[in-house]
Length: 333
Image 1: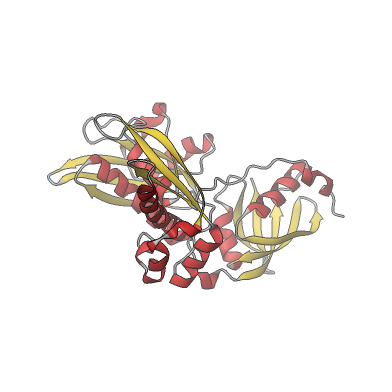
Image 2: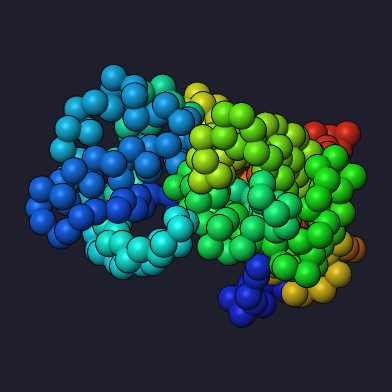
């Protein structure tokens, strides 16, 4: 038995944030059966979009029959109340939350030719300056963007007020500064933006960095609410373009990985537990441990390239490339 194996059952490990991909949440007027049946359709559409990353996923003809009455796909449902503060006057709203059977959703995606976006997704800390005052939006003002992120399966957190002044400009240098602030709070990525009034409503100029690279984009809307929701959609669309993969690319492939910076029993356990937690990893086993390195053999949906794109989304390790023997080299943080 390899050294440190005894400790694997005892160690806690920091795992990547996982979005609740197979649940959809819809505002409803009441708890009647008619409202629930209609909400099931909207909730399943939301789930298809979240899991695939494709904003038009629910429009595929192959999912039309399932959308007529998706009740048989619902595993559980419940209602909750919450205060909606996105408008001028706070409103108490009733929400219907439905959880769908993951394998049934996967079959729908496969039959429709849709991509599948792994559950590991970067968390982004958000700063947005308002169109009227130029100061950072409050928690309630930012809700349309945060909620749209949840609906699209991405994790958005509002940045701290004391760091809000840093969101004034959107060039890559400033986003990198914000990334350092977010990193101290344990968040790997940043989304920053500023809203501007225009003749047709509101324009939003945004930039984001998910821990890999910086991208910028512009959105518009008749109102601030519309512009913020559009920013949530565009961020999700761009992340999906990076990380969603076709069903044909999800075939399990044998991968050998060498993990460096294994200095003690805790590091050994943390590395193995983290990789085992990834949704694309199967049949993980340690094959060697020497010095400060650990060699692991595993089966990975999509192969080594997919592993390298996913592994850095948590705050546990980064991909350092490949060895001359074709092994994936990973560095434990």
